[in-house]
Image (spheres, rainbow, N blue to C red):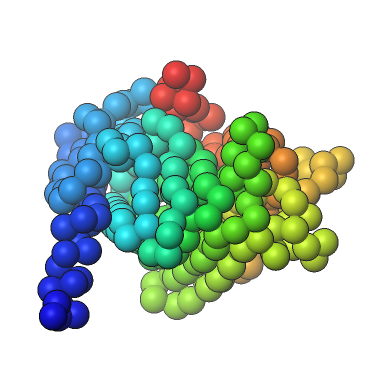
Length: 279
């Protein structure tokens, strides 16, 4: 008879248990990637500096997709006065599961005077996938943060909808250990189809901006005044944008427009699109 501990060990050998920890510090007048510790198939390319001092990093998952039982853990921490942009070279993919859950845990910590932009490309969740995804953001009062998460359900171009499967996604945002936002969202076939849910729209996402104010809120309200499927609110100093659409490109366009609106005032840098998005 196989014991529970032996079964868990077998499961871990059969599935990816991937972890990466990234740490940034200000050195020699620019932001440097000083910690790069990984286990399993999570990597980063060498840093790029298309904006001078600001460090751009591309996060890679070489297998290209995640199955039930896989676990991805990403930990990012900046020291004071750093400027960091993190994105991915392509969409993440979570495949159909026969019962096991895929886990994704993201920890982002931004120190005083630092800026972090967390801008991954979309996450494609195949019909029948089981996904738990959590993003925990630890902010300081004087830092700046722009971060988004975009989900695509099924593969509409291939005729695949989202008639089975489940996504559990979480955002937790704290400033100096005080809660700013705690949110959970569960999406399954019922939520996807319902009029009170996604109304069969196959893409949805959230964009968070810290530290924002009434001017940013009004600017985004003006931006979406003639658009459907978009919304914005201000929770203390946290700007929260929402979007649902039939394609992820519509959400990306909205979120990139918001980033362009707020980046100069928030970070002190002109709009700069990561060049990997053009490949």
